Image 1 (cartoon, rainbow, N blue to C red):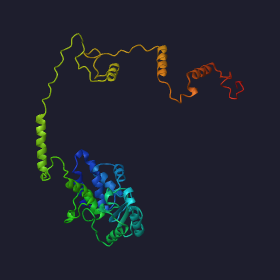
Image 2 (cartoon, rainbow, N blue to C red; image 1 turned 90 degrees about the vertical axis):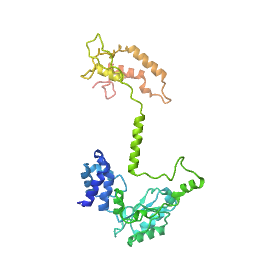
Image 3 (spheres, rainbow, N blue to C red; image 1 turned 180 degrees about the horizontal axis):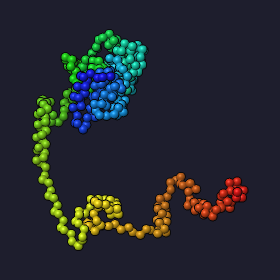
Length: 364
């Protein structure tokens, strides 16, 4: 599919919102943008996003398949989502969903024959205090009952646009995708519709009733414009920079070393002992020579004698007794040594030749 010039122009505008070296951050709004033209994220939409962002299609597809708001097959004008998670289910959400599914003749993520309604059950719509809830293109219908849900979908199929309980007036899924891509709803007065629900305002009502407020907060404080906020931030940053203490003077250079032919270098005190040891054992062009000032050449001590090693091992075993289940008998050192001696002598525990597979004691 060839996307319209309007979509391509909007895509460039979305990408311009991000730093040049972070353009792939524009992928999420771009996926909403292609969905606004096709009604879902098609293979062509994935290819378009990959092309404009310089990604491969696998990278785009991995994101598009992760988020449920990106539909992978054609979707109706109105996406009806019914919450069937715990709280709404207890309050009747599953009954609402079952009623709509039977009435519309569709199941989860299926679309009616007229292309108007796509039904889905949702895990959680983050509105437990209004349950059971249903959304149409992500706008809320609260405390919905089966009959009320049927009335909403029938009005949608008839060409109407019922008013949500909260939020702006309804729009189609494609129109909503434009808004999710970061563009304003251009319908006259659309954003002025709706209002908050009473449960959402309950905390505010209690605060007013009991005189609870944020310390030092003045609700009449004017909201600054972006330019004023930027200027205030710049002034605060300048004051913070001026209040910083003066930097400490650089340490004096060490005096020239004497009695060595090596050039003076800074002692690598900031390196770990392991790094210093490795550099001394395997020097390269950047490694200070062993007799440079501040360099200590590690010297390996003599290897412990086998007797000392066995004594240390025995001491460790004595200090760390095995757990209650212990080690299997076959792991005992005595049995292992006996088996080793028998293998070296060429005889088994019963004196038979280990090469005798018949068990008769006769080598074949």
